[in-house]
Image (tube, rainbow, N blue to C red; front, side, top):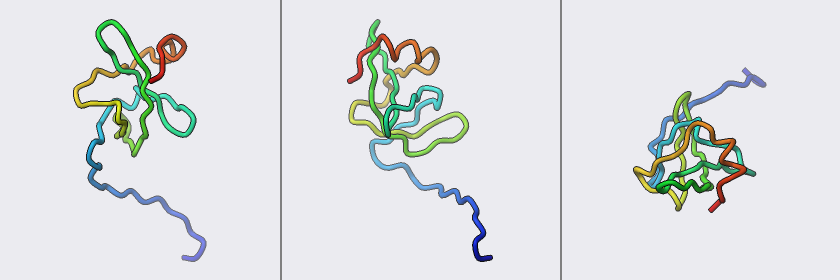
Length: 86
């Protein structure tokens, strides 16, 4: 009917280089998202673009992320004030 609105979900394959991370690992940062990766005893913030999400995971792209990198999914608000952004 005219003027009626509805939501549509498209399930498309993720582009090359996209990674799945816990949704709780993402923090809003300007028009993108921030997540923290662990390097030994150190943590650093990485800017990522979120391509979509479900209840538990998000699909992101970032040239700074590699498959298998450990990401922080709890306590990230504390890291935001302590760890450097890349």
